[in-house]
Image 1 (cartoon, rainbow over the protein chains, first blue to last red):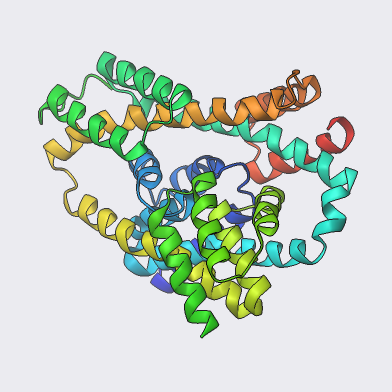
Image 2: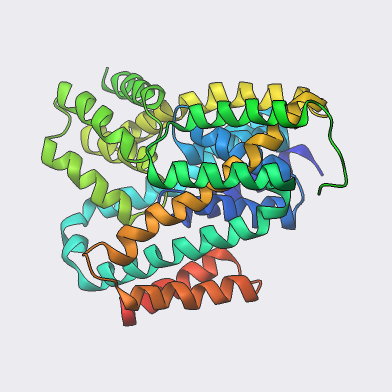
Length: 185
Length: 175
């Protein structure tokens, strides 16, 4: 595909994703999976999973980090810039609107109900994304053990994500030692 | 110059924080130092950020920029808070792509991927508790919305924006 057209698509799709990213941003994973992994195949599932924890453990905003990792992979540095700006564009507009009618919206019972609905759907979106990614992410029994340890550490303690990623990197190196069997998947 | 100040200030906020609520104390320090917002207004950021799509970081940068210096201020602050991503993550992505196919990197990544998934599942729990039991009792109406939209997500190929809209409409009746 023509390069300019691809960049434009990245911008538009990221803007759409930005418009529908609520609740701490994790639903971005599900949306990138739909748009760029399944539909356009510009990213692999492995890359999506790799970038998830890296985006969380790098300084800065997780979803912007995620957009930069994915944008860079799909179209080099211009792809990264376009993805980050596309993702944040809707925020600039919606915040501008909300700031002007903030006090009216805050007390409005319909707004509160609407947001309650949106907050509730974030959880199934995350679970659905995790379910789809499980085969790619978890290889063999050791993978399952790492998954459980990471889940409990993140759910029950405020463990530093960077530390978790570094420990997982070392664990991966020690377990597989550069030997990648194909039959485990 | 106010635009440059906003840009630098939010660049600092970006580098010093790891997103989400961890940004609030850092944002608080910066905006109070320059007198851009009051403490009460900082707490408003959290409420506004919850009402609007996007992350707390971008939303607060936009909010503070808009309040202090209009649309250009909003853009300067948002661009500033994106600088860590545009530098560090781009470099990391480049490194990973160059190493593609390296067996040791692949081994290490096989350790990271399940940890990623564990992180994602934990996010569902830590977000779920305040959503469904924030007031101390279980909000069955919201659980019902989650279950119905969950079934839609797992059983149909409806896109996520559409499912979010369905949830919002259900919220109007059940929320």
